[in-house]
Amino acid sequence: MKKLTHGKGFWTAIVVVAILSALIQFLISGGTLNSFYVNTIFYIGINIILATSLHLIMGITGQFSIGHAGFLAVGAYASAIMTMKLDLPFPVAILAGGIAAGIAGLIIGIPSLRLKGDYLAIATLGFGEIVRITFLNIDYIGGASGMQVRHLTTWPWLVACVVLTVVVITNFTNSTHGRACISIRENEIAADAMGINTTYYKVAAFVIGSFFAGIAGALYAHNFYIIQPTNFGFLKSFDILIFVVLGGLGSMSGAVIAAILLTIISTFLQDYSETRMIIYSLVLIIMMLYRPQGLMGTKELTSLFKYRGTGKGGMPNDNKQTIA
Amino acid sequence: MTTNKLLLKVEKAGIRFGGLQAVSDVNLELKQGELVGLIGPNGAGKTTFFNLLTGVYVPTEGSIELDGDKLNGLAPFKITRKGISRTFQNIRLFGELSVLDNVKVAYHSRAKHSILSSIFRLPHHFSGEKEMEEQAIEFLKIFKLEGFLHEKAKNLPYGQQRRLEIARALAANPKLLLLDEPAAGMNPQETHELMNLISFIRERFSLTVLLIEHDMLLVMGVCERIYVLDHGQLIAQGTPQEIRNNPKVIEAYLGEEVS
Image 1 (cartoon, rainbow over the protein chains, first blue to last red):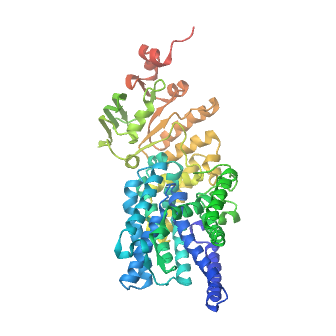
Image 2: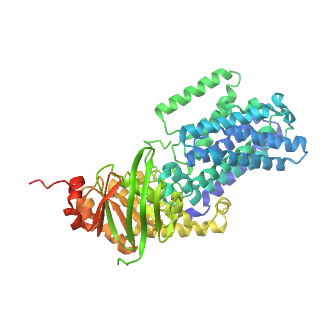
Image 3: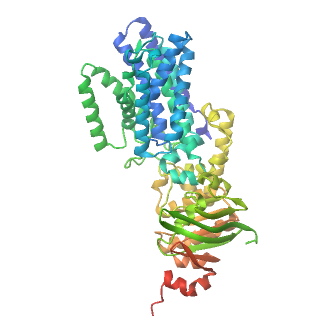
């Protein structure tokens, strides 16, 4: 029953992450890295949280959601209100951002997860826009001119949140609850016929995903001094969607790798923002033509080191089909 | 092994889709332990009737009772938990999941560990998952599928996929098993194995079985009673011998013997 417990791999990964993040902390506090690189690294961390949280909704549960920036916005504003208006400590603000986004996910999820495929996509897209426009019109949080936020996001907080997100979502996926979600993705009618409460699991995955998007929002808000509703438009949702699709729907390592790569690419293309979108689109088109299953397919990095996969199962011998 | 206890009672059940009366006025009774066939031409409403029983469609008229519990209007997953499990005409396995995980999904509704205990890897999670895994492996051994435990379901050969789908349906611990054309696309050899499998699981799990099938050899060979559906209505019922000689059934479905 070795595969049911955290094996050596888990602790190795934790140690590697700890050493790596201590090294980066050392470089940051020593002033070796200039602020451009520091910013990129922070941005990578936030995007990893966003990618993995959407991965749970789209890659695992198979629900096509393109309003993820809406939850990011809810988390960002909720946490900013906590620190700037109510003078509460940063950890409380992070948690509040997550909870606020989780509640938003619950409210949106219950009615809209009755919809399937394209219809769900349109409904979630609509939600994202509603959030943006609502924030645009509330004077308490600054309206269109945005809200000043103190810089509170530090490297240790960021690492802690990234690790928490990845561990929680991995643990969820590799359990009977994650299997229930995958079975919905694979065949909803059969999942229902096997006694899975499909609505419950779709909403659960949606709420967990939005919760972590809200946490990412809190970190995002306290990293950039100012938040404005325009930061959370549907292009932001598409950025997150691209991480998940490019990485491979159903692969968390894929989503993480894509988030890292694309963040680096887009930071270096910052000066040419129009070109950035063209390059993005081209990458996607080429990807869909030549590798429609994404970078990793449904496989995980960890399964490359084993004969047989666990959790999501299967032998690494098939990459002909997509699962979307 | 057939007892006189009534397991399933369907009274005047029917469903209308707008102007189309797909199934109407179906009366059907299954006693515990029976193996009953449901036949009829294509489009007669056989699969629609299964969908009524499993809650995919809600009957617009009549009532369905399992063991005295009314099933009308219950969600499919609740009906499964009450004891009706099924396979599908076009196989619906969880293709990307392994054979083992497919069966584990059927055990899910009996899982004792919550989402929180899984997320935080509490002791309940480990004991629950371990129990589930052991049961599922034991279960797959009965179906001689233990050699494929970690193979993706979609990579199995066709006959094994059918077998796995039946195994998965049984893992949900049903009182009544509905098989929708289990022999479709099988060669005579595989059909023969399937017949043996059906008799075997029926005895092993003291199960009641209702099966839709076009392969008359299989239906006449294993079923104790047969219902015939045509244009959404029952036109006959009885033993295989009676059905074979029923003029209405011959006209609607079986056809005249070529001389």
